[in-house]
Image (cartoon, rainbow, N blue to C red; front, side, top):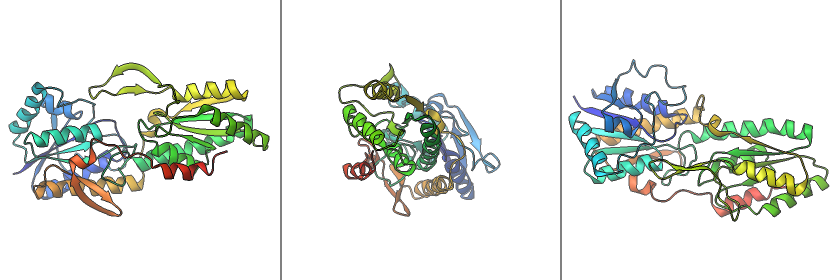
Length: 341
């Protein structure tokens, strides 16, 4: 009997359980044994796993998060880690390993493939910033949650004549903030791709008030930066070298209130965007990606990952997805700016 492994790495994401379910259902249909490694690459390092069968994945389709757990462990940090992964791979005689994750997880998968291991990938990030795929599951859920939150902020902003700054996830790419801002009717949208010119932001808010609109909604991605400032909670980094972001919304809110004199409140959505039931789109896309991953293993297409191209799920090399992020194009941001103020 063939044996394959699954792991989920990086941040949790709505739709992960749909992928796991699809892999297990399709894998067992091929008479394969499927084992899931707990807590991402850490499970490979520690040989911490569970056997997954159809009973184990029954009822998980609508659940957020991941039944396997996740972590930001880097399996390529040093040679000792690489040796541990190889040892676990050989111990279980894996015919393939399906790594589900974002740039860091898939970057590690690509390096392990270069080391001779049979690895395929499934792209996952709510930020939608992975190259070589039009969409990743989890993004649609996060986008809808952020949009609903902006909708709700409108009523309290208008009632109290306030400026409401809402901080939305997006480390390097502002897809969620941009599209949630457009869908929710935000008056100003600030993203990592475009340094914040705070005086222009304040001028737009003043102009709205002159026109009789006594409230404003500012949607800002967590990775957005003032032209001369970076904002982080602390300097501690994870194993992939990422600092913990946050605080830019508070900083911008304080500046707006000081410069305009208008009462300003800040709402940080944070992990609310990650949690809860995935949308139908994310459940379907996660399912299709899981089916594709099993197909890649079956055909021996290691070093590749599932990818959404238009309406079709195809395959692309892992290397095509990592190394460079998919950022918001300048022309898309210019479209959004037509509705500022």
